[in-house]
Length: 140
Image 1: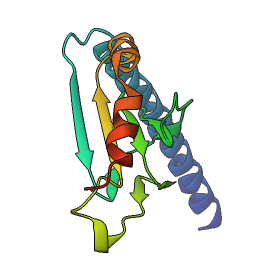
Image 2: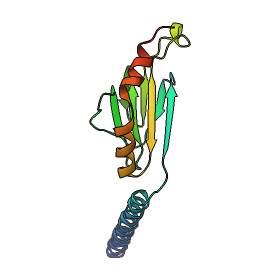
Image 3: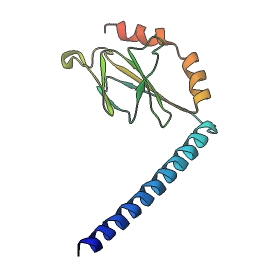
Image 4: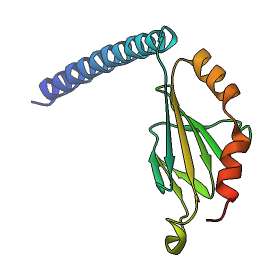
């Protein structure tokens, strides 16, 4: 039974290797299609969250902030500018919010720009970072 089990194990390893190679090929093709779709995207959205305390960002990597406390870019294309006291961990960013003052002043701002790379860069250049900082420094 030993030689038969050895041959069976080799066949299983070979099949597993073929499946892994097929999966890698399909994954690379899907990533290329996603990148092409993102580059050809003609719409954009900008969302601003205030005092939310948490934002979900899958596969986000830090980028130069341009004045934000923290700036992150997702592999899927969204750019996040975070103002206030934020920390990034895994798929989330969390802000420190003083609960006793949460409704009296802006403590954390999360700006999400969802667009092609070119459009994101254009929108971020037009975004007035000083206006956000000014709103955050106001006491009510």
